[in-house]
Image (cartoon, rainbow, N blue to C red; front, side):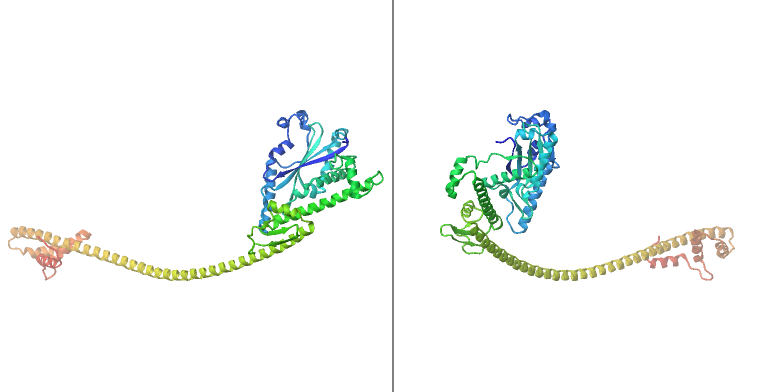
Length: 477
């Protein structure tokens, strides 16, 4: 192999595999570089600080989060479109290692080496359909030969799928991709050559097979024409294989509910949808079964495309029927909801009517309560007045008795001192004079009591007053 060779090696990374550890290896430092020394790689930890990041992700954790978000977005779009979601083992990333011959890269300065790998990154950026979208790229200067490690995404947001299978292809495609990769690097101005081509290493065997195939004697004058012819045939075979794989992948991805039966020997078959009465027949197969895929691979591209067309028609018909069924179901549910809504409105009207009746009754009860409270207040007031009146009526006879005893005692004493005096008449005149001088409330009651003993020519007695109070319910000793 020439010391000026350049080559790339690619590996698939499934969506469920985190790249945290891989990113730690890519962007290793002096503290953790020893963990990646396996005796073959010959990592020189003293040079690890010289490693150079061309495309650096925000962080390993952030890159895994970004991958999950991309995956979930495409998965959501597919489900919204009625398609099957992405498989958990879908390949969403590719790991690519770009390696050169030792003499070629070591004859460059560090800046020239970095410029070379930057140009290689540009080659990959210019052809995302082959290499994918670059998420990370780093140059390792701490190993025997400087090389670049790149992580790219295979997700296709336009078609909501992963292009990993198409990007990687089979051995023929990988060989062609290696050749095209070298040509692209050469176009950047570098004198590099392709690495070992396992499909052309045995020249004599190849020459013999080519002469039998093309019925021509190969010599140095026509050898390049045979190479070009074989390369074109390889590209055609690769394109057909790639197209067939894409069609099969479409059948697996977009029409998983459709079944088919096909006999390669008779070149006859049929496709049925879920609405067919023969859908559950054991002779039918899903597009996503391994046995079915093997059968599909045996078909030529024309039959595959026809099969895809029929499957699409069946799928569209099935989706249309499903849509009509859903529309009918929604209409029935809407009618049921309208009926329930009307019943609820009627119940609401009844409830409002009952609520109004209860409000009226409540207002009546409130008015009655207020009336009773007013009556109670009036009754309490009358009762207090009556009690005050009764108390006053009780006090007056007491004063009557007091005044009578006082008058009798004075009259007896005066009559004894003045046997010839009309004592009662004298006391009455004296009482009238003194009573006019009484001004206090307490004296007013005494004044009234005294006045009741004798008013003008009428002379009511205490006995008469007692009799009057007895009639009102009072008892006296």
